[in-house]
Length: 235
Image (cartoon, rainbow, N blue to C red; front, top):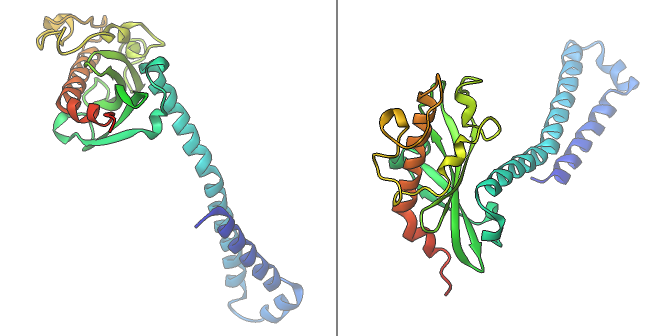
């Protein structure tokens, strides 16, 4: 049901209520016991219709803002020169329950140039941050190297764990260029755990869990690499 149809129905109901509330009709209804109930019901109906109209009007605006925010995040992890398509509308959904990415299925955004897949990006979650889940987005080139990682949302401690944000520190940039090929399994850890990535002073759990989540994201890509690259093969 589109907005025009709902508006027409709203106008029709409003006209009926207006007719019902005319003084001559009210005089006929006033002596009846259900008069007060009817008046209240009428106003309640109008209020409900107004709320419904407001929801419909703002729903598209909210969705547009969410899409704009997501597009901005995707552009932070996928250089614009690597694609000529619209990332938001060129996607593949893959099962990811076994990958521990925080969802049973993961939407993978494909960065294509002249039809060929040059890179992919997807959202995932480090579910076990110090203060809760940490939502991230990562861009990976077709060879499996990280192009960029950004934090979408988190509840980590301000001044400590929030250094995972690009606006707080450059730590998140240390993943650029890393892959499962140039960093060994054991090295995918913070330095306190004999890895190569820095931890934060007074906050080790947050970076530790982000590092492990990013490694899982790379493993997810590697497991689906052939499938994803095949979506860009020209016929």
